[in-house]
Amino acid sequence: MRFLVAGGTGFIGRRLIAALQADGHEVVAFARDPDRAAKTLPGSRIVAWNGKVGLPPEAAFAGVDVVVNLIGESLAVRWTDKRKLALRDSRVLPTRALVERMEGLRRRPRVFISMSGAGIYGDRGSEVLTEASSLGTTEGFLVSLAGEWEAAARGAERLGVRVVLLRAGPVLGRGGGILSQIAFPFRFGLGARLGKGEQFFPWVHLDDLVGIIVWAATHGDIEGPVNAVAPEPVTNAEFTAGVAKAQGRGVHLAAPAFALRLAMGEMADEVLLAGQKVSPARILRSGFQFRYPLLAEALREALARSPKQSGGAGGVPPIAGATGGGGAGVGAGDMGDMGDMRTKPN
Image 1 (cartoon, one colour):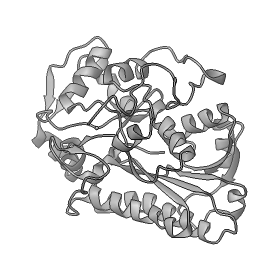
Image 2 (cartoon, helix red, strand yellow; image 1 turned 90 degrees about the vertical axis):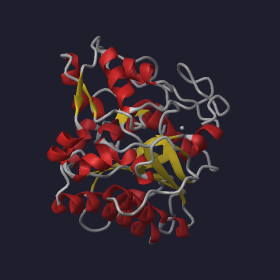
Image 3 (tube, helix red, strand yellow; image 1 turned 180 degrees about the vertical axis):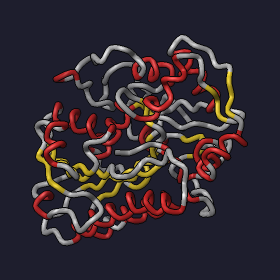
Image 4 (tube, helix red, strand yellow; image 1 turned 120 degrees about the vertical axis):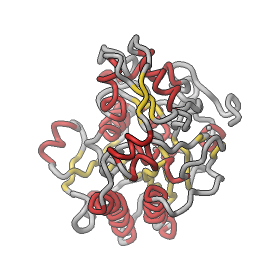
């Protein structure tokens, strides 16, 4: 199959493209800086497009079966009005442009997979959230942002393209994601839970997110929202303790809610102190098997010192999800009940 990836030079995109190539797929990738991207993504065809100006080049879509949209600026900043606009524009505008370009194609891709986030459900306490659950209220910025992002992607449905919306949690893996931002203080015993730590924290390992993307691309019965999170629900306090334990440390500190609000403003209430107990119900029912269903296993791999990884050509692990795939799997019948916009998608 031929994949077109927007946002391919980022944390998720690099691993996705390496895994696709190792599995024998062709890859075309959009990049702001093609020369730099060519060094980062060897073996891919690089096409210049910054995602903000004009439509993507029509030639990039030639023979493409699947478009994967990972573009979006990080949410891990204080949200001023200017920053909110930038966060919105970095997601909604490129997504609309991709759909508009597909509309004019004589031969359209069969599948459009676009990132979203578990934050679309809002702050829901201990309620188990599946893809059938209602969305959060539109009062919060995060919920409205994710809703507009998904609506832009759904524009491809009227073109006869199968659309998959990945409601991902924070991504755990080497070389980026949330752990690259928080691991250092934990090594010195300075990790802290956020507020009371009771808020649920949806998460997913990078290899499993890549596996979900490929699984969704190759399974025609999967469409609409997909909760791209691990099956084990954990609270912020449990996640914090897990990170500390994986590095041989304990947790003795807490960041008070008032201090987080002073430092990060609105973002603290909607991201750091809010929680969603999200279930990957749809992907489990389809037969997908998680390589890292449990937090302890995911952290052990993601925080390992050695860069070497087992399996796959060139050190790239086999794509998660296949029956008999690597490590402990959780099949559709193994867990009954379990983005997020908190992740930096590209």
